[in-house]
Length: 284
Image 1 (cartoon, rainbow, N blue to C red):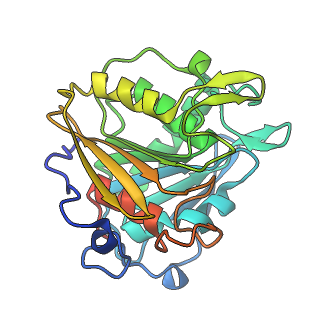
Image 2 (image 1 turned 180 degrees about the vertical axis):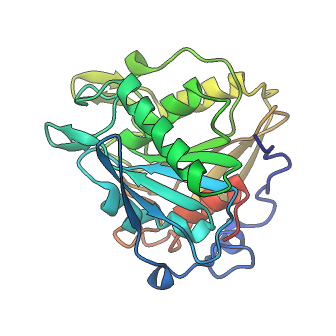
């Protein structure tokens, strides 16, 4: 696993660092990106984007939220702009749409979804020179991404979770450090940043997930905080074995930050995608 230290810290205002037109920001124009490849892996559909100028050593696997699908996810986060090969797998049908395990409504087990991810990694590695595998998840997909990374630190180089719902009953016990970016909207009423109940079960506050990661990552307890008015408050944990970052999107709701359908007027276009690129050290 390639180390993320030192990764790019937010020493300058994120207004400049996270602008999609800034130097080093994701550069692939989605309009010029070829249509995704459609694969069937373990009897499920996977969309795979290969950018026009790929970073062949990087693979991102991106998991959609409950009731969404692979194409929705791809259109919203446009992670191909990071320069990585990006796989968008499809969750299995549950009561109200496709879902991932770790949630009470899922129709699959953690073991079944994990085996699916194993096959995705194997197939992409057979076609591309992959050195690092990163996971990104939204909502229900964030919960599964966190679980898989937690259980497979030897396979995963980093995980980024957005608006995640983390059901503790479905969380594995794990102790190995792994780079983690956790992003949550401060005004999310679907999955509260402060935790709550959903589908009859309690889910963790985002800060609890981060504190658990701080212990695993050997962080010393010191933090460095940066803020941009009306956009974000970012906490970087210090003296960790591997990086840990927590971003609260100011006024953010249950949307991918900066996606076309995000109603937050203060968040720059592509904000969430650039957060991923910055934390994983990808530049498009």
